[in-house]
Length: 67
Image 1 (cartoon, one colour):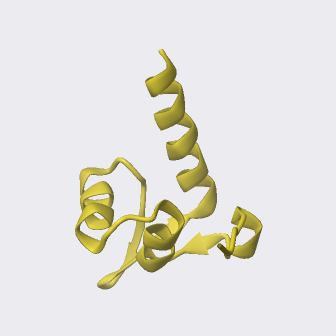
Image 2: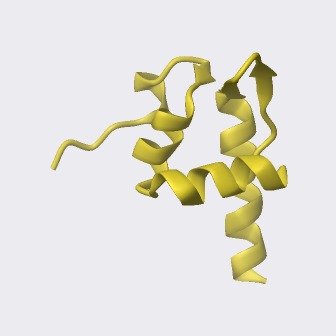
């Protein structure tokens, strides 16, 4: 299994990167983006996600599950 770290990804992610990192499907990814759970920057029809926002989302999700 090829284990990747966030260092292997650019600072601005695409939805396909999010799907790869979180091992989720397209629908789940876009639900997270549409709901605002992961903040996005939208340019035209394309979504861009700051890597630091994804890390923040993951940290918050993990802390909510340990309470």
